[in-house]
Length: 352
Ligand SMILES: N[C@@H](CCC(=O)N[C@@H](CS)C(=O)NCC(=O)O)C(=O)O
Image (cartoon, rainbow, N blue to C red):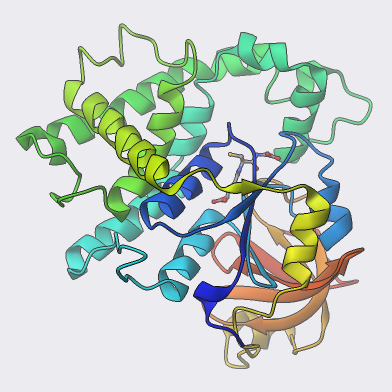
């Protein structure tokens, strides 16, 4: 097995994805080289589904060697382990236990606590409508709404539905912005934890706000603006500049098409040794799971209509790993325990 830092990394993403922007910011600040493979912002994504057999329908997806990882929370955790701080790859995570807790809580609360969902609900309905019916229906699929036989208005991304959610979203995002303005940033510091440069806590908190700043008409200026919250807005702009400056030093990542991306992945060695299915794990014990079982794997929040199939390679307290594959060859697919489920294939795979 090669050292992880010798292995190729491929990032599948699209530029307007806020989760992908979070990943790009992390990879840039850590100076971790990667190749990118752009994906459409709606299904189908044959580069993932057909070539690699990955049914997971969300973005980003990142490979390290022949291991492929989904969900930015797992991806960042893996990169922290496989690329420890060095002169070539500056560390941005904290060393004190309090700060490590803050990073972890921010990572959880921004996704699980609904901050991202509220930020997404700030997308003006006209902007979504302008993307067309295919987008509106695709996002209904993402939310798990069966649109068969239904009109576009049944989508949670229809104009009426978006307009109805917006006022609540404005109130919630204002609340988060005010919290930052009046607590950590109130003393005039540059970065959330008082570090000399942007740190993991900044990466974990800034991305939904940074994304909404760029959406034309996203923030109502009378409620959330630079005038009302100067410290938060300056912090977001500072972060933007830090990422841009580092990217300018590094140069743009190489972009490849799906065929090349898939052959880079299946042609590489695995980044990680094969793990075990931990017999004492409560879910392993309850479901009678064993290494080599045919299983289904899916996220439980959004995108759960698309389940991955493969052989269970390992399952421990942090992740599920299955072996799957497509026309390009086989890969190991990793998903975090948190927010995902596995079930024996042929069982009641649809339950959440
Ligand atoms: N928990 C996932 C969420 C990823 C996610 O929801 N990404 C959005 C794009 S920002 C997505 O996949 N949207 C639907 C799509 O692009 O198909 C993560 O941390 O990576």
